[in-house]
Length: 582
Image (cartoon, rainbow, N blue to C red; front, side):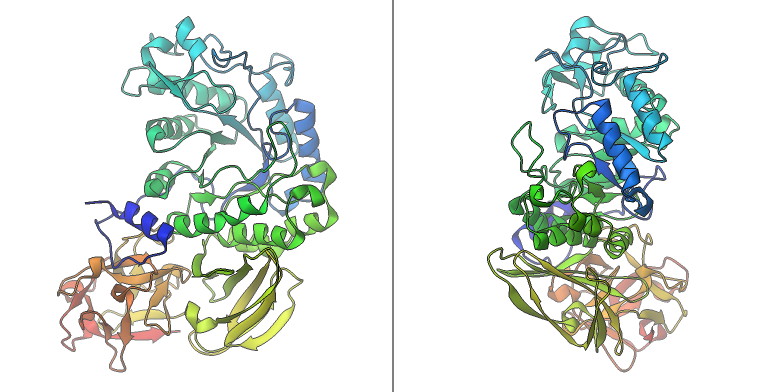
């Protein structure tokens, strides 16, 4: 039987609904290193512009511009060095020190006063009030294996932990896989992580990983934590959603597609292309259930900042920024910050977009047609953020979106989030013309109806229907009763189609495996329109599963926090009576 993680990934990829989970899934813990707890990280990544030709002087110029541009003060506070910082003499692998770790290219990053060039660079970044990022790939250099370098703090050597197969290193090559069942393997990664911590690293990008490199990711996650220094772990690239639970438990962010850049090797421009931006729509939708507290999806850096050198039109640049914000992706700059285009800078500095990204609620896709895509999410206070995207790059289109389709009943006050908070009226159906490749990004605040802000209160205990785990949740998380606290995991929105949406209106109250028998579990699952997610809220206070005719019930008629919900034959007891608290 396939796991539910695989099932949801396939369903999202092909656009079909799931009636319920194929296997019971335990709620995984997001990365617990205390970093990116409530929101994704922000900053600048060196690969977008510097690519294959970095140096200390070039990197420092970007750091200076990050500060002088005012972007640092808006939250872009990581400056991340990418590949090519180390010596790579050829196919034999990166040069290594006596402990088998990569050696900094001192011609590009000179040391000073006994400090390694990477530590010198880290000191400079920190002196500007920023955090410092670095890059590494899995495995151990073939040079270390050939030289049988020692593993620091042990009696083991590199050849004793290496396999004969190649590990991923996209540019230098010459890396060998590590057998993590061998003694000394974890200690090698620990020694490397300790070195990075000594250099002042605050963020580590582990590139070239995937399901086959889970042991490497696990080892690096452990190693960074044991340093005692808070170091964010970013995974790259094109990671599969079927392993979403694994990545979210080990790292703070994970790349879900290839590079955003569209330039040939060795060139910085264009920063991106429409093809590279638009393919992220499906990525954002597929991975939406797995992002949350402590761990976030990474759509890669923006292709925005350098005007015509961006490779995309001004409306498409708004799409780039808006989709990333709605997805609560890492907000990482990728442009040459020393030559920012004025219009692009205003977009990068848009406080509304930054706030939408930093709310920590990844939006769900609610519409996908030939030319239109709609992503939406709801804040704890009931405000909705909605992006209506025109994926046709040849002409503008007019779209009409009934707000009830999202679960926002009644009318709402609409405000333009990109263009200076321009008020757009009070409507129940939002109609707008969207430029070719562009987006209409709005907020919607209910003026009548539920507005998606209701709690479901048990008549028996006075406690609320609650998604276990607070803001850390995954498909299959149980629904339970808990003391009412107004949290986003206790807010439900009835839609015109019979759904009860929660967690930012992106997830639905769901019957486990679409069961129609008494005692069936009730859980959380991405909204998919299936009959297992249709409910009838009746005037007598009962909530009836439309597929089975059974009632939403507190298991065992218990009143303790954490008591799970189930379906049961309707019997009129207080354990099956609910009221709305708006």
